[in-house]
Every structure is written in structure tokens, then in C-alpha cells.
Image 1 (cartoon, rainbow, N blue to C red):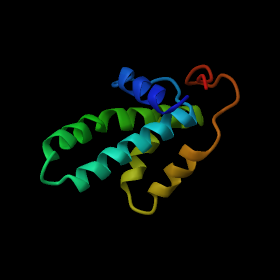
Image 2: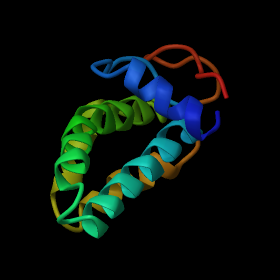
Image 3: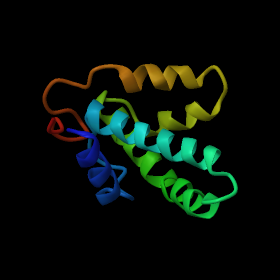
Image 4: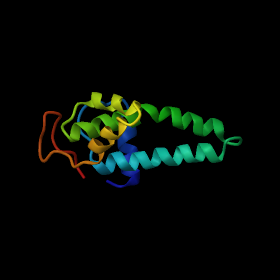
Length: 113
């Protein structure tokens, strides 16, 4: 999955917290969010409203993609709440960067590349 496909997929699955997400889908969408937050920081005065709306609108798809990514590693989506706790949040990052389950798991079939 490339950068544009990832953005389209994550917006299409805006409220979808079920199923699985590939590593590329999750990490490309994370890069997109980082770019938006970076632009929000750079354009603090000029386009702050536009980038603020984008940042707020991306909150739900970011969490939804993280939950689907955790499902790919055969972990419960509730693990994403641990990411709010300092230091323990690195545990969730470990799960997000690890390889997904081979084949089908309890959350569905393996996502397409």
C-alpha cells in the first residue's frame, strides 16, 4: 500500500475499529498526520484554522487505524489506551511495529499489501 492508498483507506474506514490494518497502511497514515501537525506548527498564524480542522478530523481515523493495526498483531484494540500513559506507551509502539499474524486470526483475514 502506498501513501495515497493509505490515506484513502483510513478515511474510508473512518469509524471502523474492526478488522486488521497492514503495517504500510498504518505507518503511511501516521506520516500523513505528522505532516499535518508539522504544517500546523509552521503556519501558526496564517492557515491555523484549516490545519486545526484537519488535525481534529484525523483523531478518530488515527485511533481506528491503530486499533486495526493492533488487531493485525492479534492484540485487543484496548491496548491503544495504554499509549496515553507515559513510558508504558512504548509497549503499544512495540506491538504496532511488530509483524502481523500470518494468515487469519480472530480479527479477520490478513490485510492486503
